Image (cartoon, rainbow, N blue to C red; front, top):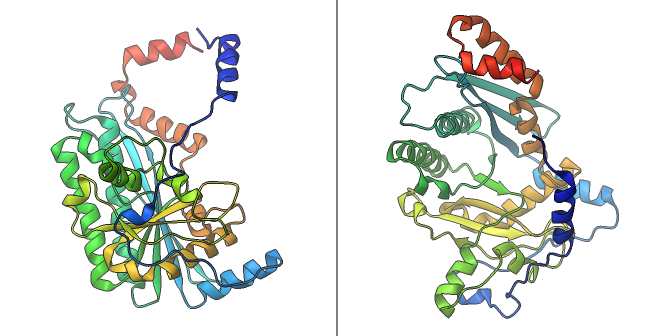
Length: 335
């Protein structure tokens, strides 16, 4: 049975009338602890070429890298179930030269007590962290900055098994410790953030519930392209198990979308303006408002439909005698 699109159309009409009532106009961010100032880009731009020249100036002499990953969850129709994880690194030397790095590994679950999808996500994250550390060690003698696509704060870990949780924390703490030891900045980039760190703190101060997200509150404060907030420290349950506090700030890259969020280890807190300018420059190079290095790493790491099908075909040939009759029956009926 397929979706009833006539009913779906009626539901979508309700969506057109939906308005999220956010009670944030009267809130004062200054009530919570922060570091640094509200600031902006001290430059005048008239044309896109001016933005590009500024971006090149911000990146001059810097090596900017990004790491991302892709995965294929284990296929339960095979025995044993087999999945794949891939990590990709893109290193831009900003002199016309760059380097691409790709690593992959198989995932073969050995216990049904672990969810296959959770195990695969962990293996992918571990491979990404391994690549970040390798890039730090290989290019650490340069003025290196590393972007990570997503939040550095793994709040979802509170819902996972203790074994998975420990491995995630071990990996992220190793990256954070090496970052501080080698003084190599690592930047977690969240394009559209649904975080509520600031609002949760204000809720505790005011003793009442507040609807909305931090980015909606920041939109009231950040008006011009390049404006950024002070630095705040994340105070979540999971960050208590981190080897260092995680800081975050919001910045405006377009008046058409809510402010984006970047996260970084505590030792980088005085680098906020430099980091924001670097992220803005990468957004300019990306053309569409997304950091160029992250776009490049994503393109390398992405596992498309054809590659997934080819992977399944290769596994099928190797495990042809171990295929599930149930899955084969479904496949034939649904052709």
